[in-house]
Every structure is written in structure tokens, then in C-alpha cells.
Length: 245
Length: 312
Image 1: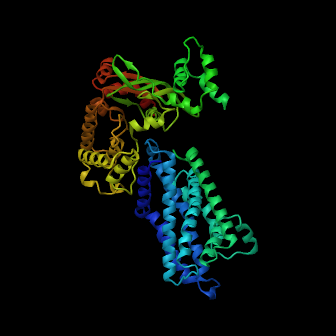
Image 2: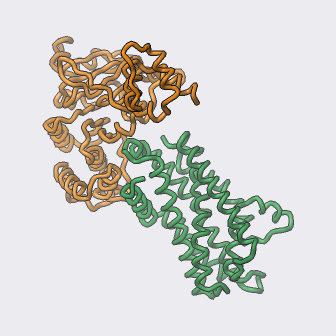
Image 3: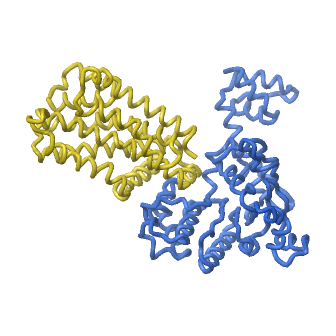
């Protein structure tokens, strides 16, 4: 892998985040707005939710919406002939996919920082202190791999960015309802054990409670890592084979 | 695995087998048969050793007109029931500006896509600078530049950033990228707009940027697929001058265009393609003489007119 190629592609990906209104809104402004609204509206003991239980869910919200922006971006670049053009350069598939992974992991880290900073100013004081936040960053970044994978799968199936938006909700909605802060019955909790964001939620809660020495934390971490790596590999293979031109 | 290697080796000629053996420092007596060499090599080589030979460029073909940059032989591309390229054979010389003309859907872009490795041919072979387009894509990508039919640029990047990105993908040095970017922006009249986002460009400006990106890596062979579509007459003339100037750098240029005048003005030779077949080939002058026509447009219409008459 050539460092020069990776850096150029990651820089381009980050410029896309800042300069494309959809990306900027969905990846940064939306999580920021949601954080403010949810904390002000729901995070009080009278509503049965504490701020500490809302913040991990908000981080997950931000990361799962990466699925949509990644899928939109790949399908629109394919539609514009950009992927075809990139394929005629000496850049390898590994460099291209590697850059996508690095870019989106970086974006997920920025998202955690945004959500956490806003929540902090609105009264979120995790028992874990700064170490907890620092630990949340790499774990969320690992989970972001699954969003890259699911985004690639969506872009493989969807032929246009509009269709990609719709299909991405197939992956977003279950994670949103079964793996954030939406209250669950015993039945839905059973379903949630099959949803990866449920494990990230559990892990983030343990981190913010300063409870990451708990053996269950390692189990959560293992599920998140295995699922994310598997999904990103499947996504890359499918996209390379059926979706890239 | 061994049977895989054997089947690959059996597909090679004696010279290639001896070359693989030499690379593995095995000497082969002159009187050994091909099958005996295969049997020996099966025990001593890996697929990688064989691929090193397969990826090596064959010697470029030399004809009375010069060295061939591109050799297409019996090329076929089928999409389900449709044959987009039908037994196309063609040789394009080094330093030549070759125009591929044809009505919509004639197979021009499909041919270019195969030569660029975007599509695989159904049948036939094509080599670029001696490299097979199905086996040596890595090597081919180092020496080609593609200006696609659609203005494929990142709209959220400015002109300079777009060019620099592709320069980096070709691993050019920072200095080289800067120098070539400045030169092209100036030559094509985009210097003043270089810091503007491509999303705000007019169709003609996007086309110019599209062309610069194709040439930033200083490719030996450039494929320009309808590079001047959407440009006004003045910009088109300026771009023609620019494309013409590339000939002085001994670049091989394959141009597809709907502007017959463009092909007539710029090309050394023209190939007319219809229903995927090469139906006419020669210099513009030769074609005009052959068809007793006043210009290339008349030649084109006399050959492909039936499509227009049929309303296709």
C-alpha cells in the first residue's frame, strides 16, 4: 500500500465530509442536533431516562447513519463514472478500501467527540472520567467498520443514491430500535441480542460507568470486533465483484 | 494445485517454458520436448513464477509504418444477446493520433473500456505497449490516461484539488504535480478558476478539467472519449489545438468523437466502427478519395447512413 495514495484518498474523504451538505448534516449536524434535543427532552429521571443512559445510544445513532452516507457516496460516485475512472489509475483496490475504512473510522471518532462534548456541556458526567472517553473512541471506530461494510453492501444492491438511501434503512432501523436507548420488552431484548449495536451500547454503558474490567465487557468487544470485521470483508468482496463499475 | 500449474504450463509455448526454467536457474537441453519441460517445471515452479512470465510485455509489434502501441485482434464483447464489439482487429502506431468514429452504440466506448481494463473481452486479445489487457493491468495503468465520456470529477473539490488527487494516485512527486497542474490549467484556460469547486463549473469547464486529469500522469497512451462534448465552438477549437500539441510529445492518442471535423483536423488515421465492426480504416485523405467525398462527414454518412435512415 502506498502511503501517498492512502493520504490523498483520506484527505479527499474528509473534504467530502465537510463540503458535501448531505454528509456534513448526516454525519455531524444530525448527531449534534439529536444530542441536544434528546438530552433536553428525555434525559431526566421523571421520564425514566438518565443522561448517562442516553449518551451511548446517541453515539450509536451517529455511527449507524454512516451506512447511509457511505452507500449514497459510493452509488453516486459510480453513477458519475468516478469509480470507473479511479479503476484506471494505478491505485489498488486495497488502497481504495483501506482509505474508506480509515476515513470512516476517523469520522466516527469525530462523532464521538462531538456527541460527548455537547453532552458534557449539558450535564453528562460519566463515572469513568477522561479514560472512559478515550476508551470509547477506538471501540466506536471498530464498530464503524460494520457501517462501512453495510454501506458497501447497500451500494452494491442500490443502483442510484436515492435507492441507496431507502435500502440503508434496512440496516439502520433494527440497530436504531434494538441497540440504542429505545425501551425494550423482554421479547425485543431477545431480538436485540442478534443486533451488533446492542453490544456496543452495553460496552459504552460499562465504559461510562467505569466498569470496563467486567468480563462481559470483553465479550461485547469480541462480538463487536468479529461482527464488524466480518461485515466489512463481506461488503468489500461484494462491492468489488458486483458493485464497483 | 499441481494440476492447475500443469494446465497453465501446457498453455505456454516452448520459449516461455524455457524462460521460466531459466528464471529458476534450471538449464533445459535443446533436444528436450515441450511436454518433458512441462513435467519438469510442474515439480519446480509456483503460479507466481509463471505469472512473472505472463505479465512480461511481449515485444511490441513492428510494422512497415512503425511500432504498434495498441494491437487489437479479433476482439469480441457480448452483453447477453447484444454484440457490442464484433471481431474487431486494429493496430494503432506509437505517436499516432487515431480517431474512432461511429454512430451511437457502435461499440467505441466499449472498445475503450476493454483497452482500459474496465471490461473484460468475451473473446480475442488486445495489447497495450506489449502488455495484455487481461493479464497486465497494473503495468498498463502506469502508462495510460483515460478521459471518460462523462465528466468524472469530484464536484466538492476545486479544479486544482481534483488534478492533485489523481496526480497522487499516480504517485507523482509534489513538484511534478504542481508544475504539470499549473501548466495544464494555463494551457486550457482554467487557471483563474482553479480554486473554484468543480460543482460550480460550466459543462465546457468540466470537460477541460476531465481532460487535464487524464493527462496529469504524462501517459504514453491517452484515451480521449468524446473530450469536447458540451464545449462551445471557441473552447472546442482551443482544446483541439491542445490535443494536437500532444502529438509533438510523441503520445499515442485514441480519440472518439461525434464531431467529424475534429477527427478530420486532428487525426493521422481514422477508423469507422459500426455495429461493433471496423468498416473503414485509413487517413482522412485516403477515406475521402476512396469514397469520392469532399470531407470526412460525407464518408461517415455514406458508410453509416443506413442507421440514420433506419432512425436508429
